[in-house]
Image 1: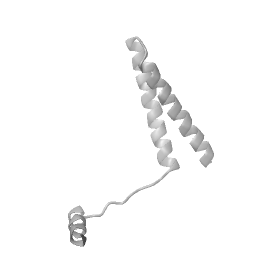
Image 2 (image 1 turned 90 degrees about the vertical axis):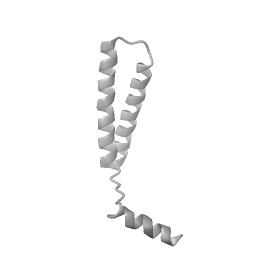
Image 3 (image 1 turned 90 degrees about the horizontal axis):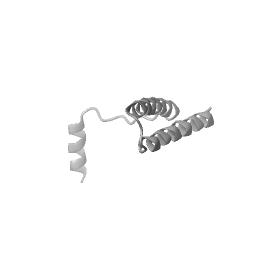
Image 4 (image 1 turned 135 degrees about the vertical axis):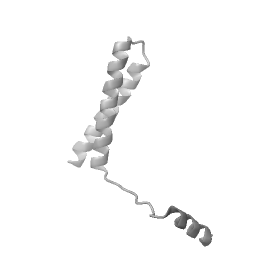
Length: 75
């Protein structure tokens, strides 16, 4: 399953790169709008797949001001 997700991630990433290359060419407004929509769809699918494949979270301290003041006291 992990390897399949990595392959899907590569596919989405390659599609996004292909769309970016196409956007650097001469296109009609209709073509450009279509590619913009497809690229946004690919990016959304990529973001969801990456979040599912690598569920990493970094919790922040509840009170940032006390954390920064305690860090300054340790110096």
